[in-house]
Amino acid sequence: MTEKWDVIVVGAGNAGFSAAQSARQGGARVLLLEKAPRAWAGGNSYFTAGAMRTGHGGLDDLLTLVEPLPADRAGRVDLGPYPAQDFLDDLVRVTRGRTDRELAELLTEESRETMTWLRELGLRFELMFHRQAYEVDGRYRFWGGLAVGVVGGGKGMIEQHLAAAERAGIEVRFDSPVTDLIVDGGAVGGVVLADGSRIEAGGTVLTSGGFEANAQMRAAYLGPGWDLALVRGTPHNTGDGLRMALAAGARPYGHWSGCHSVAWDSGARPTGDRELTNQLTRGGYPFGIVVNSEGRRFVDEGADYRNYTYAKYGAEILRQPGGIAYQIFDARSAPLLRPEEYASEGVTKVESDTLEGLAKQLGLDEGRLVETVGRFNAAIAPGGDFDPTVKDGCRTEGLTPPKSNWARALDTPPYAAFPVTCGVTFTFGGLHIDREARVLDTGGSPLPGLYAAGELVGGLFWFNYPGGSGLTAGSVFGRRAGRSAAGGSR
Ligand SMILES: Cc1cc2nc3c(=O)[nH]c(=O)nc-3n(C[C@H](O)[C@H](O)[C@H](O)COP(=O)(O)OP(=O)(O)OC[C@H]3O[C@@H](n4cnc5c(N)ncnc54)[C@H](O)[C@@H]3O)c2cc1C
Image (tube, rainbow, N blue to C red; front, side, top):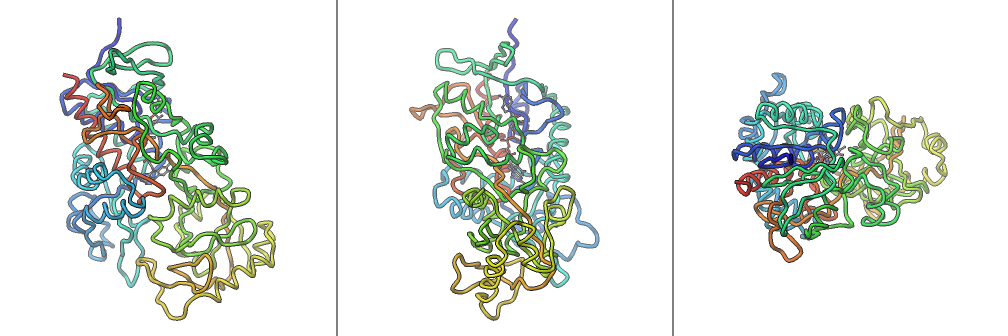
């Protein structure tokens, strides 16, 4: 006999759990199907830092959301308001005005209330002192529009989601790859699993991620060379949901040749490491310089706060000869590097008291590296007050590419270099959804019975991405998708 549920959710990451919870709150019996085994629970969401961007009214507002502050820090926090409008402005700016306005407004305006909703479900939040603040003059100054994270990062998030799903009576079934949608008379009525079994439902929500772990699709859509990038997260996001939905008549939408990709330890394995997860990211480059294998700089390391550049600089590294680059710091900049990323197990690192020694170990032309650093040091504009918590204007003059903030001479040994390559995070192209997270067909009408949220939704992110937006988008639209699917299923 064919199994029947009110709502099926395909893919148990943050978007999937959010959709399942909201469908359950809408009174539906919910089945959450996950391709991976239990040991790989959580998709890309597991690999995250758990950082969630939200509009907010400043410290007092966030204190109602997060766990109590550590006693030694309370009263020493500088954290101004980040209105939903600022979140929207940042999204519009980094996507060069291409973000889907309607979806972007929903994301930013509903971000704060969605965080409260998640908290009520059982997720725990904290202020991210370790990632998004620096101690200056005895105060913890937050920067870059991102302040809140899940306690325990991505690992904590999935543990908390699984526990909340169990409390809510949501069945989560692992080792259950969905291979097809049941389409009858133009409406989606459930799914087909890899073993050929069929499960019917009034509403089907796709939350099965992008195609970042599919080398062939990366080469086909992102372009030549992208098959060589390392994958930061789960090996299971191979574009299955996209393929099924497009075959059922869904409309492709958004930046199909674009993705989120970062500077990633060049010694990392081809797909994510469940132990090290996000620690393989190398996000400290605003405080040093980055050179390619010819010893030349190729990006403005200080163009903006890391949160607004890191997601597009992976692609710049991939474009360099051999797809490799080297982040270089000296003894003055090193203390600003996060120990989890730069001083923990598995970090590929080279150190020397001289730049020549550094170049030799890296296999770079010694003279060229010395010349690049010398020209950089000589180009730093006089004056300036170095401050990692603001765009401090400490910059180079007459140098190409420039360094627009946090430019300080690299002249204090020992020097350290970190070889990095391109780590792909998730893909930007996806399905087109409306306000209610209904999947639209090629004619622009809702495909009956089909909803979507998370990474496989297109249109929000183009070229670049404001750090911490992916998880929030998954929850905002997951919540909407679950509500719609529950409503449509009865
Ligand atoms: C290292 C790293 C760090 C990151 N840090 C952050 C951060 O701090 N903040 C932030 O906002 N974003 C971060 N991101 C991005 C973030 O991971 C994504 O935006 C978010 O997790 C997407 O959630 P999702 O639920 O759409 O996808 P996922 O969490 O990837 O879930 C998709 C699920 O679908 C399953 N699936 C795939 N195909 C099928 C199928 N055929 N049948 C059934 N199930 C299927 C997968 O196995 C997976 O479990 C990070 C990503 C990585 C890789």
